[in-house]
Structure formats: C-alpha cells, structure tokens
Image (tube, rainbow, N blue to C red):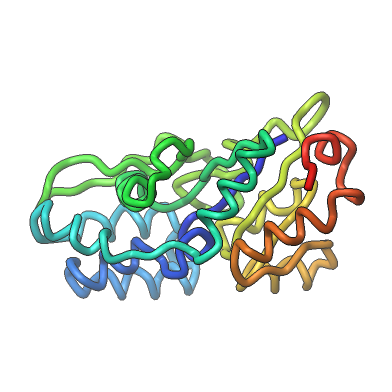
Length: 224
C-alpha cells in the first residue's frame, strides 16, 4: 500500500515555485505562465523556461524557501501514517531542491521525493526533467502516471492526495483519492468518487473513518 502526495498546494498551502519566481525571477516568468494557462506551451516547457529566469544567490533562494510553510496537519499525518506502517512519498511536478529544503527544515528529509531536478548554479539555473514522458497527458515534467505505476495486475493499493492540474490523469488510477481545488472540481465533473479535504487533519480523520470501507489490503494495515 502506498500513500502518494502532491507537494505544491497540497503539502504546502502555496506553490513554492511561484513563491521563488515572484521573489527572484525576471518578470517575464508571468508571460510564460499565461502561455501555459492558454495551452500555448506545455507545463514542462513553461517550468524549464521559468527556472532559467531565477536570479539572486544561493542565500537568496534558501531564504525564500525557508519562509514557506507546511499544511498544518501534514506533520501529524506523517507521524500517524508511519506509526501504522503506511509509507508516505512525495510525487511532484515541482522542483526537487525546493521540496527537500522545505521538508528537511521540518524534520521530514526521510520522505522519498520524485520531482524535476534543479541543476546549474545561482544565476544560471536549469531544470532537468528525468521523469518526463513523451505523450504525457498532463504535459508535465514529471509524468505522475508513469512514476506511480504499474496500474495492472499485482500491485499495491494506492491512496493519492492532490490539488491541481498535474494530478488530473493519475487521479483516475488510484484506489482512494483525496482532492481539493482544481483536482476536486475535475473529479466531480467526471463523476469520480473522492474524499474532499482542506488540511491533512481531514485526510487523517477520513482514513480512520473509512478504514472498514477501504480495500482489504489497506483495511489490514490501518488500525485506530
């Protein structure tokens, strides 16, 4: 059984990449964002070009990241899950350095993270996308369907927690979906069952409440 969590807007209330761009990038990043929203470029192309616009030194970048906060229930959720032998992992179309810096500051450096890779150096950053896939439905730098599979045959029960567009495709392949924001709207529009949440306190309570209704593999794993 796996618990997979998106990062930006899910584990963090804000999008950390946008936070960095707003603080340190050339304003041209907003035009790229508008092109992505208008589907003129893919999310993957948008991210690569935006990251290249980030200025400032390493200390400037770290200061911006160190001001980021976590969802108020996430630390308790991880503690609750790990006490029951339920592994939690992060799969994000964000930036690995941003994510690991924030998690480490909160004592969560041990969580596995799959994300785009920040390479280069201050003033010459570049984004590498080792988890991209040609034909990815989301057009993301991290194809979440590819990363979180396989989806057939003998596989682990999957719980997914997310909020945004990069979660749309993978959300339809999970056994239990927790959704808010654009992801909740998407799931509702297509008639997909999901558990709404505002914070990870809601996710913890719902998993406890739904224990008897979850797939058998998960029912055996969770005890309250």
